[in-house]
Structures are given as structure tokens and as C-alpha cells.
Length: 63
Image 1 (tube, one colour):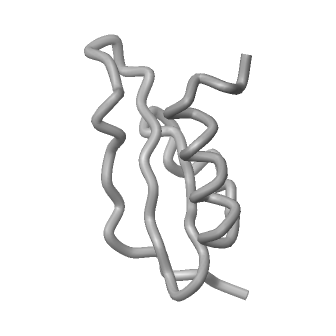
Image 2 (spheres, helix red, strand yellow):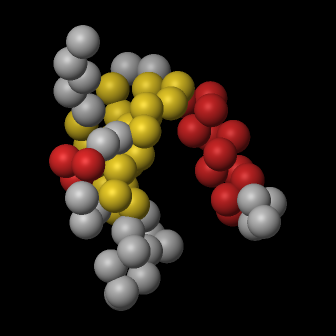
């Protein structure tokens, strides 16, 4: 199965050192990848999981 994710955008929290991630979407899924290695793989999650992950990151709850 080939996914055609669209709307790739870089995190606004990415620093100037190049440690960036970007996300793209397609229907009910979200793709997350490293901007330094876009061909290195994409983590695919559904929108609900991505929303929960984003909430944890924003709350700094992943330590």
C-alpha cells in the first residue's frame, strides 16, 4: 500500500541546529519524519494518536 501524504510542514519548535521533524496527513492518518532524512522512514499514526502525542509533548509529559 502506498500512502500519498500531503501538506508536509516543519515543526515550529524546530531549532536552528537542524533537529527538525515534519508532519504530513492523508485522510485519518498522520505521518511524522525527520527532515534530515526524509527517505529514512515515516512513522504513521492515526489522527487521534497524533493528537494525544502532541498534547503530551506540549505538556512536557514525556520525560
